[in-house]
Image (cartoon, rainbow, N blue to C red):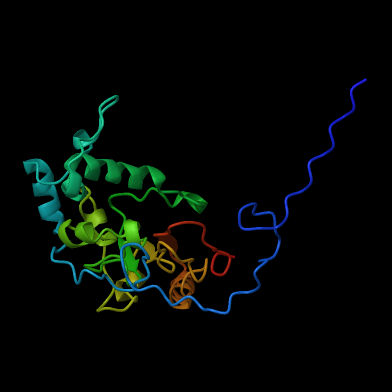
Length: 248
């Protein structure tokens, strides 16, 4: 009978084999410098391309733009078996791809909880918006680096939650927070209060510092929950988020 071949010896730890638990060359003594803000690192807090050159259109402009062909509609999106045309450097304003992005946003929106069937909101519902992101002219774009396209942020009109609700045909115009703060005095007379909040912005090349909302946003949610009104919390999030700190 033929003898069995001896088992191959385990490869020794080395850079080539990658079979080591610890760095065989010892711990690194050099600290990597913080990456400079760039497209590749996505390590910037503010838009590195400067403030947006485009202002968010009014609800009337949104309706007019759609009817005149100025803004993308569902019909502009890709069809079965037909992809959006590649326009190279102009892809960020490609109507087909913008329509596809709108569809992705709508279909990826997730309802985590809907107690007492608060949603969907009736067009006759008196809505009060709270939170700094609700009516801002520069709503946050979640994602740094490739997720925050400077061209798109600067040249494509932005729609905040207030404009989005008001842009629905026949929809009631929601009231906005007073000034630049999160509070809305009209909330006491509203049927439903919608809190628009966002966690720390995600970025390419770095982890989010927390999976929770900012403490200020949590405080606003708790404050208006005490009014005895129906409260909807709308979050713009790039991934998992902890809600137990305010949704007990």
